[in-house]
Amino acid sequence: MNTYIVLSVKAFGIVLLLLVFQQCGGQKTAATDDGWVSLFNGKNLDGWTTKIHHYETGDNYGDTFRVEDRMIKVRYDKYEGYFNDRFGHLYFDTPYSNYHLSMEYRFVGELHPGAPSYTLKNSGIMFHSQDPRTMPKEQNWPISVEMQFLAGITEGEERPTGNMCSPGTEIIYEGEIYPGHCLNATSETFFGDQWVKAELIVRGDSLVTHIINGKKVLEYTKPQIGGGVVEGFDPKTKKDGQLLKEGFIALQSEGQPIDFRDVKIRQLTQNEKLKSNE
Image (cartoon, rainbow, N blue to C red; front, side, top):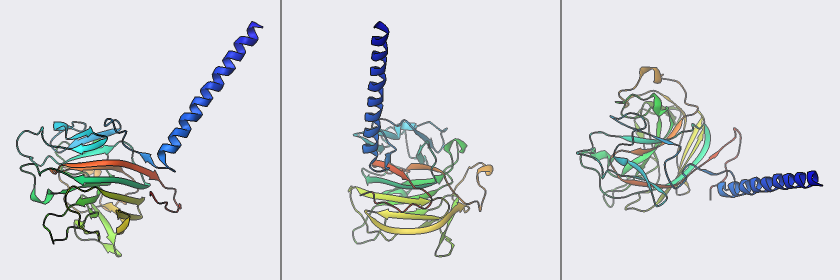
């Protein structure tokens, strides 16, 4: 009789654990919304690594990247002196290849003194980036492709967002290697501190699509290592002509305060049809 009771208690415990695991699993599935997974827990920067020009990897100088109000904020109020080209990036610690990335951003505040004028209301997200742990202290930008975010400065002057920039990389646009460093998208111009939704669809080393507020604004192919702009890199990391099939994702800091929220990703199978994030 005692043995039977003990076994029953153990069995009940196992069933209870299974129910708890099943419930947690159900909650996780609901939270990811048909495959969407948040890259940011809303509380801290666990799972992310900083690399700021002039500092070692992992040194989040001046609390540049911080979490407040369930947002990732980029701020410079703890910086001493001028900006001094302290371009920074916050990298998610897992590399990706085929995926659909989504987030919202807004520009706030004033450009930090000493930051280059071109960084006014300018930021972005890097993808297919090199691992920040392979970057020397004095490397200014990661070898990567950037989905550039801009906001309007002067009423009546267009300044599209969702553009492409290529530090240490190149792309194929309309059948040819694009000769410039940045390529404008076809988005409208956004002024002020309004939230803008940015999506990036990456198919390994083949097709890349930029989407702003639900509209496709740019598309190109074959991201690869090449070109200039990047300085201070380890020559072993820059193999020009090498197609970029995967890499790290990083939020940018270059002198302009900015907020990021709802940063999430959905991995894609090789031949999967894209599903809307709406």
